[in-house]
Amino acid sequence: QVQLVESGGGLVQAGGSLRLSCVASGRTFSSFAMGWFRQTPGKEREFVATISRSALRTSYADAVKGRFTISRDDAKNTMYLQMNSLKPEDTAVYYCAAKVDIFGSISYGARNYDYWGQGTQVTVSS
Image 1 (cartoon, rainbow, N blue to C red):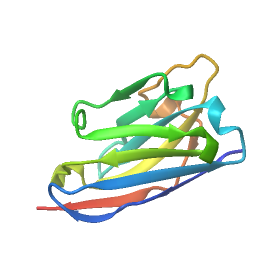
Image 2 (image 1 turned 45 degrees about the horizontal axis):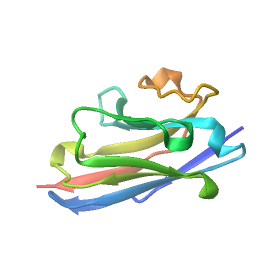
Image 3 (image 1 turned 90 degrees about the horizontal axis):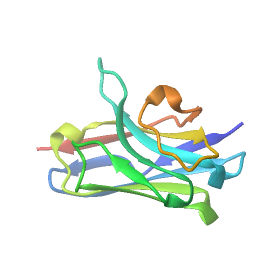
Image 4 (image 1 turned 180 degrees about the horizontal axis):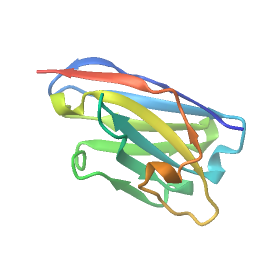
Protein backbone atom coordinates (compact mmCIF):
# COMPACT_ATOMS: atom_id res chain seq x y z
CA GLN A 1 0.00 0.00 0.00
CA VAL A 2 1.10 3.57 -0.73
CA GLN A 3 0.03 6.74 0.96
CA LEU A 4 0.30 10.06 -0.88
CA VAL A 5 -0.09 13.39 0.88
CA GLU A 6 -0.23 16.67 -1.01
CA SER A 7 0.51 20.08 0.44
CA GLY A 8 1.27 23.61 -0.70
CA GLY A 9 -2.09 24.67 -2.03
CA GLY A 10 -3.67 27.99 -1.15
CA LEU A 11 -4.99 31.30 -2.38
CA VAL A 12 -2.83 33.36 -4.72
CA GLN A 13 -3.37 36.29 -7.04
CA ALA A 14 -3.18 35.88 -10.80
CA GLY A 15 0.43 35.97 -11.93
CA GLY A 16 1.65 34.52 -8.67
CA SER A 17 3.34 31.22 -7.89
CA LEU A 18 2.81 28.17 -5.73
CA ARG A 19 4.77 24.98 -5.22
CA LEU A 20 2.85 21.80 -4.49
CA SER A 21 4.49 18.84 -2.80
CA CYS A 22 3.46 15.19 -2.70
CA VAL A 23 5.09 12.95 -0.11
CA ALA A 24 4.85 9.19 -0.56
CA SER A 25 5.18 6.46 2.02
CA GLY A 26 4.71 2.74 2.13
CA ARG A 27 6.66 1.55 -0.90
CA THR A 28 9.80 2.44 -2.79
CA PHE A 29 9.05 5.82 -4.28
CA SER A 30 11.60 5.41 -7.03
CA SER A 31 9.62 2.52 -8.53
CA PHE A 32 6.69 4.78 -9.44
CA ALA A 33 5.86 6.98 -12.34
CA MET A 34 4.11 10.01 -10.88
CA GLY A 35 1.55 12.49 -12.04
CA TRP A 36 -0.41 15.60 -11.14
CA PHE A 37 -4.07 15.97 -12.00
CA ARG A 38 -6.66 18.61 -11.18
CA GLN A 39 -10.41 18.74 -10.89
CA THR A 40 -13.09 21.40 -10.65
CA PRO A 41 -16.70 20.80 -9.60
CA GLY A 42 -18.76 19.07 -12.23
CA LYS A 43 -15.77 18.23 -14.42
CA GLU A 44 -13.65 15.16 -14.88
CA ARG A 45 -10.21 14.95 -13.37
CA GLU A 46 -7.76 16.29 -15.94
CA PHE A 47 -4.11 15.59 -16.57
CA VAL A 48 -1.62 18.30 -15.62
CA ALA A 49 1.86 16.75 -15.69
CA THR A 50 3.70 13.46 -15.40
CA ILE A 51 7.23 12.36 -14.60
CA SER A 52 8.85 8.98 -15.12
CA ARG A 53 11.04 6.99 -12.83
CA SER A 54 14.44 8.62 -12.43
CA ALA A 55 12.92 11.82 -13.89
CA LEU A 56 14.11 10.85 -17.36
CA ARG A 57 10.87 11.92 -19.01
CA THR A 58 8.30 14.59 -18.28
CA SER A 59 5.19 15.77 -20.08
CA TYR A 60 2.66 18.55 -19.57
CA ALA A 61 -0.84 19.46 -20.56
CA ASP A 62 -0.90 22.21 -23.16
CA ALA A 63 -2.73 24.49 -20.73
CA VAL A 64 0.21 24.54 -18.30
CA LYS A 65 3.20 24.05 -20.60
CA GLY A 66 5.83 26.70 -20.01
CA ARG A 67 4.32 27.74 -16.67
CA PHE A 68 4.41 24.58 -14.55
CA THR A 69 7.39 22.35 -13.78
CA ILE A 70 7.17 18.84 -12.39
CA SER A 71 10.09 17.32 -10.51
CA ARG A 72 10.89 14.59 -8.02
CA ASP A 73 13.41 13.91 -5.26
CA ASP A 74 13.59 10.18 -4.71
CA ALA A 75 15.81 10.61 -1.65
CA LYS A 76 12.94 12.52 0.00
CA ASN A 77 10.12 10.40 -1.46
CA THR A 78 8.66 13.64 -2.76
CA MET A 79 7.29 15.00 -6.02
CA TYR A 80 6.80 18.69 -6.71
CA LEU A 81 4.79 20.91 -9.01
CA GLN A 82 6.15 24.42 -9.37
CA MET A 83 3.36 26.61 -10.70
CA ASN A 84 4.24 30.05 -12.05
CA SER A 85 2.21 32.73 -13.82
CA LEU A 86 -0.95 31.32 -12.33
CA LYS A 87 -4.28 32.12 -13.94
CA PRO A 88 -7.81 32.02 -12.52
CA GLU A 89 -8.52 29.02 -14.74
CA ASP A 90 -5.87 27.08 -12.81
CA THR A 91 -8.20 27.08 -9.83
CA ALA A 92 -8.92 23.46 -8.90
CA VAL A 93 -8.23 20.69 -6.44
CA TYR A 94 -4.85 19.25 -7.36
CA TYR A 95 -4.16 15.57 -6.86
CA CYS A 96 -0.94 13.62 -7.02
CA ALA A 97 -0.95 10.06 -8.29
CA ALA A 98 1.46 7.13 -8.44
CA LYS A 99 1.70 4.36 -10.98
CA VAL A 100 3.73 1.21 -10.46
CA ASP A 101 6.12 1.17 -13.38
CA ILE A 102 9.09 -0.91 -14.51
CA PHE A 103 9.60 0.58 -17.95
CA GLY A 104 10.42 4.21 -17.19
CA SER A 105 7.28 5.34 -18.95
CA ILE A 106 4.94 8.27 -18.41
CA SER A 107 1.18 8.12 -18.36
CA TYR A 108 -1.54 10.65 -19.13
CA GLY A 109 -4.70 8.84 -18.16
CA ALA A 110 -6.07 9.02 -14.64
CA ARG A 111 -7.30 5.46 -14.86
CA ASN A 112 -3.73 4.25 -15.33
CA TYR A 113 -2.65 5.35 -11.87
CA ASP A 114 -2.76 3.03 -8.89
CA TYR A 115 -2.65 5.40 -5.92
CA TRP A 116 -4.02 8.87 -5.22
CA GLY A 117 -3.62 11.58 -2.64
CA GLN A 118 -6.49 13.41 -0.99
CA GLY A 119 -5.97 16.61 -2.97
CA THR A 120 -5.01 20.18 -2.18
CA GLN A 121 -7.03 23.25 -3.15
CA VAL A 122 -5.47 25.89 -5.35
CA THR A 123 -7.41 29.10 -5.81
CA VAL A 124 -6.21 31.87 -8.12
CA SER A 125 -7.96 35.20 -7.81
CA SER A 126 -8.21 37.68 -10.67
